[in-house]
Amino acid sequence: MKLQISAMTAQGPKAENQDDLVIWMTQVLARKESCQAKIELNDQQKLYAALADGVSSSRAARLSAQTALDALIHQPESEEIQTLLSSFMDHANEAVCQIENDGACTLNCAVLTENAICFANIGDSPIYLIRDHKISQLAQIQTAATIKRNLGIEEITLRDEHMLINFIGNPHLSGSEQMYLSQHEIRSGDIFILCSDGVSDALGEDGILKTCLEKDANAQHLIAKASLNAQDNISAIMICII
Image (cartoon, rainbow, N blue to C red):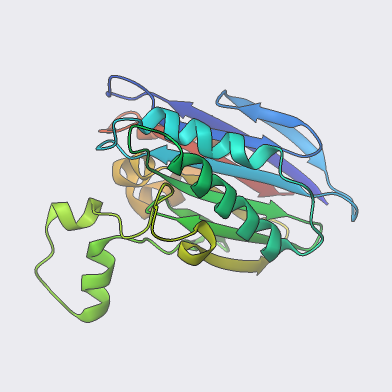
């Protein structure tokens, strides 16, 4: 299977970049830097990708995102992908809980094999699938606003939209207890996007779809479009199935 992968993170209008991202196989391919690469994945290989967004109200937002991703890279391989993602989330949560300044971040992880892609997420950073010119949300957005919508409560505030129900660095629940897991078959032409909420807030789903369907679109192109209306750090990983 052939892939086109790209990634980029940018500070946007904030004082520092509290996002972090990593893509790796047997070695790290990108870590918090812009990248573009074509990869051919065989049945013995896995591609891993993760994106963390430090919670701004935390005194250690940037360190939390970095610490969460550091905890993932050196985890041992596992044939069972759901077990592997549970281990990722548990170790990331444990590591961030050790930060003295009340660390907290969101975390999205992806494991891609020759036949399928599996995601785990904690927090409010989106994961999208673009297929047949339509966009679908694959992550579970774990905020107070989501709970209110599910309960049919109409009064939803801006604070509700940003109030996380689950997060990495939670001392009361493990990562695997908080995570939402999904698995999907892959098709030629699929585009999978992991991004921070700075991107989705700036562009909306329609804007992300339109941008990603443009010729030669990649993560750099998506970040450039998001930067025109960004209010936050903006980061994205794009995985295109060729």
